[in-house]
Image 1 (spheres, rainbow, N blue to C red):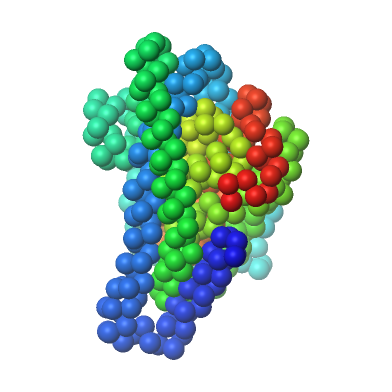
Image 2: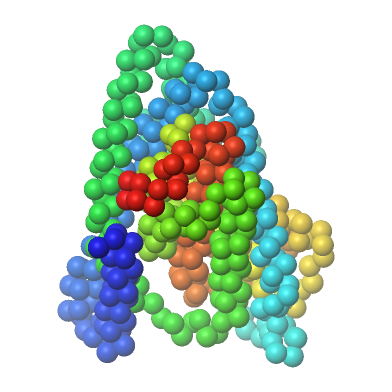
Length: 422
Ligand code: ASP
């Protein structure tokens, strides 16, 4: 059976099993709690996510060294970097703008009479301290590359790998020998991630079972319109903006793109972490979509770290929702500020579950909205996190494909071949 089918079935069975445990009240028994939900199910899910995370640093490092070494030879590193970063920023700004416009049409924070609803007090929520531009810039450069790898500091790992790769390309014979070693290691790591991907149905089963057993759906009814507005904005961006960009710029079929991106999208959905999904995305983009290693090895890790369109969309809708709920007016200048800060905040959002909600405090604070408004939406964020992470990962794949096509680094044969490296 096709892997995607297996994953979908595992998701459905997992979530049903979890829901049965919850609805029958079985998960209230101490035994089931300790040994099944927090024991077997939790461990199964965690082992899968840990296996994915295990691959992130080695795969990104080795793959990017190979890519940078190649770029060094051809001297294209500059334009490629510029194009990729610009596209990431543009798509994110587009995403927040779309989210704001859509939310202003739907008015998720107003009651049916068009009035604000703030009657309740919420627990004060801590504002996240915004790092200064200087610190952010300084933090990209590693003083100790090994420490950067040990701590999973992706931007620092990216910078070190870029420098090392460029140095290899200029180091003659010795550089060539080491380059060959990295190319071989990359092959082996790709094989390893292919093996781990085969385990996806099992991992996803456990993750979904945990979700089904623990998620309280009651919260959704309280903020149903907010929930649906974010979900629809995410769908619009994912199913309209990316396909249109892809078609317009590259002429490629969005359908083939989505068919191949299904696996990373499903893994992103189940893990809520674009960081953990990174190895799957990298493999798919390189081996199934046909993006050459030079582009994929740079664009995908960078995208997983700084490109979060889904997160920015949630932040856009949440800002409108909270402003309307508290009956506060925002002017055009405030909305422009939201576009800017949500774009920057999504860059600063770590690629792990739930962080988008923390960086939302930056956006709210910037336009003078009550940060405790986050208390309103926190209950439904778990599910929205799954959806927005799927969009985040789709955006990385789309931008990498567009950049590769424009740099003539896309193997169109592989892109079109439905079975390529399946
Ligand atoms: N979970 C998201 C991701 O990993 C980040 C967030 O929005 O919380 O992409």
